[in-house]
Structure formats: structure tokens, C-alpha cells
Image (cartoon, rainbow, N blue to C red):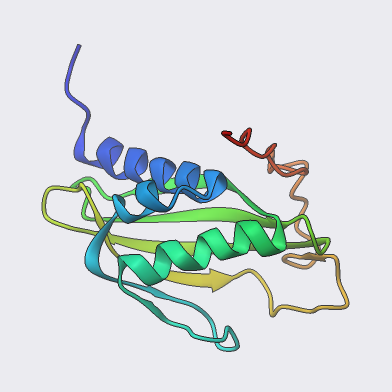
Length: 157
């Protein structure tokens, strides 16, 4: 069995991060980031950007617990050297009936074990009057994008 390529390492880290988000696993989220990581967002999100692994982990745990957030990764493209990647994602806010689609640009530390920066871009301006925020006339279903959120992880007692 061959060792994963640097691009595969980057993708695996992103997928581990999304699993931690969906599980609202604070410890696992912290383990995905350098202590001084930063997560940028488009204008309008209170408290953005989120600075530091703790703030990022706290933010996503809050989203799961408050908004019923669930995420799917639709596409991943990682650089050959593994230092940067871009993804398309869907953010399902199940408690409030909203869906947001967008992209993120990732920057990783030297050994591709932690995320140092995320820059999020939304597919369209957030319109609270629309239940699904997406690109106009883009056929997400025909392109194989998720049309329903993933199931929540079972709660441990």
C-alpha cells in the first residue's frame, strides 16, 4: 500500500474537519486547526472573521446546536503539493429551513496536518426569503449534488 499523496492528505484533513463539524465535536475541530488559524466569511456574519482554533470550533458547535447545521462536501480540488485546496460545500440549516451553497479556499501548515486559513465564498448573497440560496439556474441535482442533509450523528449518553 502506498502512502497518500500530499493532495490526498489535504482532502482527508478537510473531510475530517467536516466530520467534526457535523458531529459538533469540539475536540476534533480543535485538532483540525493551528492555534492561530483564521476563518474568513463574506460580509454580514457577526463576529467574523473567526480568529483562532477555539473560536472556529465554538462557532461550528454553536451552529449545530442552534441552527441544526449539517454540511456536505460536493467537490474537492487540492494542489499537488497539498498546501492549498478548494472545495464546494452545502450548509444545511435544518432548524430554520435554510440551505446555503458555496466554496472555500484552504491553506494548510507545512506537514498538511492542520488548517491555517479558510476563506469562504457564498454561491449567492444570502436571501432570507429563499429557503435555498444557490446559483441561479444551476441544476444541482443533475450534477449530483446532495439534495438533503446528512443525518445527525447519534448523541452519546
